[in-house]
Image 1 (cartoon, rainbow, N blue to C red):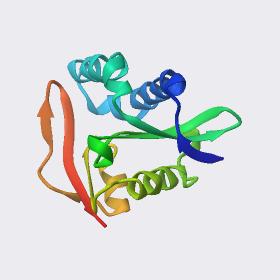
Image 2: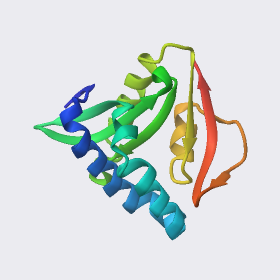
Image 3: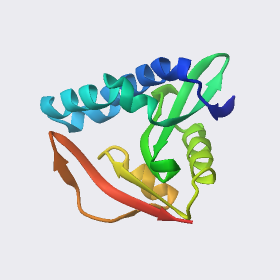
Length: 145
């Protein structure tokens, strides 16, 4: 398995993975409005997706997980690993790649309810209590290296 920057031609495969994992692990914590908002503002928003830097965990041409950053690498926009790959350190390798490519000593994320414990495990601290916006639930978090 290799961790690498994904090509623009791979963004569709990456967004398909994000949607699949979102539906499995995140959507149970969201209202229909939140699921629709995530789909429309992220998955079905090509301009937004192309504005991100995607790193992928790739094995035999299959994307097993992705982490995508924005704001020049200072903010994690998407972080999803296939369920069959949970517990295999793929998320850790993706996270380490993102943080090593961040131009500053800190990294922020708006963590989903499912993601909060994962980010805490990586050393992120909550900056505010859980927020609600357009049906989406997230907790602003930050890590300082």
